[in-house]
Length: 132
Image 1 (cartoon, rainbow, N blue to C red):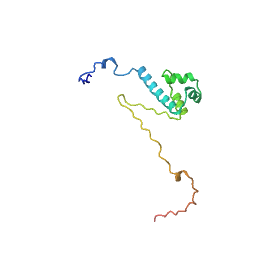
Image 2 (cartoon, one colour):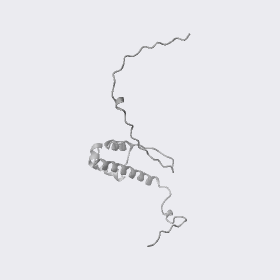
Image 3 (cartoon, one colour):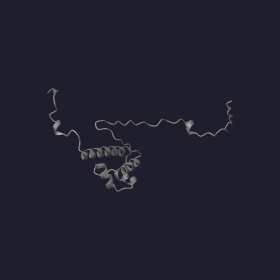
Image 4 (cartoon, rainbow, N blue to C red):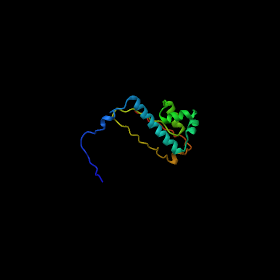
């Protein structure tokens, strides 16, 4: 068996790939990331492409294009897709080179006492002391 050798120095394959993606390639990459998240939500909820299309009021071919990364994803389309799957769209811009990490926090449980309405008490009258 050949042992693994660690070699210091430049990676001979680093020149094969561009350092930064072109705008077109970056756009396709983002579309595919969004499509992967939508597909994951669909699997979690057992929703088919045709069911998602029906919920959004569009043709199934539009869903196919969206999930393949070939469709034109507008904010409106993404919001509608999210709503159809019980999710919200969250987006941001970050300076080049920075990464964004989303932290999903569930809302804190509201005590039952706060949810229950109570009859208001009669307002108390207050006297304002006049300064001399």
